Amino acid sequence: MLNSIKDKVWKRLKGWKFPLFSTVGREVLLKEIIQALLTYSMSYFKFPMKLINDLYRMKTIFWWGYSKKKKKIHWCKWTKLCKTKERGGMRFRDISTFNQVLLAKQVWRLIRNLNSLYGKVLKASYFPNKIILDAFCGSKAFYVWRSLMWGKEIIIGGYRWRIGDGNDVRILHDPWLQGPVSFKIFDKPHLPNDFFVIDLQNQDGEWDEEFIRNNFYNKDSDMILSLPSENRDLGKILWHYSKNGEYSVKSFYEFERES
Image (tube, rainbow, N blue to C red; front, side, top):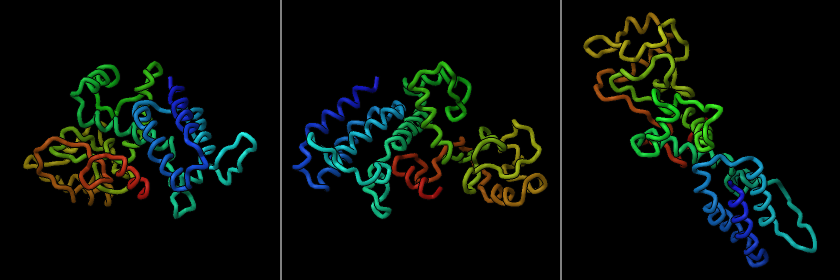
């Protein structure tokens, strides 16, 4: 199914005459033109490693030059060229990572716009009674769904709940604290699995500080009590590593630097 992508990239690379381009010219062509050929497909399908390695090989041949008479020397691996220029690379995008980042963006769109036709079909098929972040990949799932579940791994690592009224945020399982790494309760107390954040509040909406102090580790207690309690809005999923709480390709790389 994805072989046409490889053929399209190779046809484009063969059409460019290597001696006519400077190093900067080859860099721009690979970063702008070739990457654009891949972006749409990478947004919906997980590329197999064989395809990724073939694409790397084609890019490498174009970058270092090729000749019918003799083989050109490849002075370093493509993975080295994917590093930042400060670290000796050329900052080419790692195809596998960028593929996963784009698939994560599709998962985020489903979180924000589940009422779309695309969202309704997937929800009815794969997660009718839960949110997409709690869904899993069955053995008979379509390739698109398996690809999205791979992209979801990125969202899992950087999302948290804004608790709202606390009715839909599970105390022990959901990430809802503003602490680092997991955003979850660090030292889980002996509470029922179906306890929600609202169960930590008094009838007036304020935190039940005595109950919280008696049942949670000190650091967890401090983080809970630091959160605003009186909020009648619905809970909302946020991407922690952006100012507006929305996931984007740029915010992922900021998340990657922090993690």
